Amino acid sequence: MNLNKLKNIYIIISAIFILWMLFLDANSWFSTHGELNRQIELLEKQKENLQLEITKDRENIKKFSSMEELEKFARERYFMKKENEEIYIIEYADSLKIKNE
Image (tube, one colour):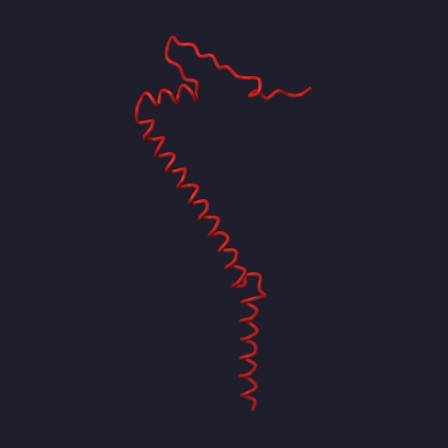
């Protein structure tokens, strides 16, 4: 009779432990899987965004393979110039940041 009670106690304690680990613990099986699934979704979105950036960069590399396009980009974006050449930058009033006094 004592042996059966002892086996039952082990079964009950094991069942309580399993329930605790599945549902109640801070690192429970369900909460960690939910968190990991959210992280997977976030990483998949980041992967899509990075793949879009990669395709844009590949297009830019193809576009800048010619010297004319590269020179045009450098002039427009970084205001580079040739020797003996002047550059005037015209900014419109709506594009300037003016402090209201």
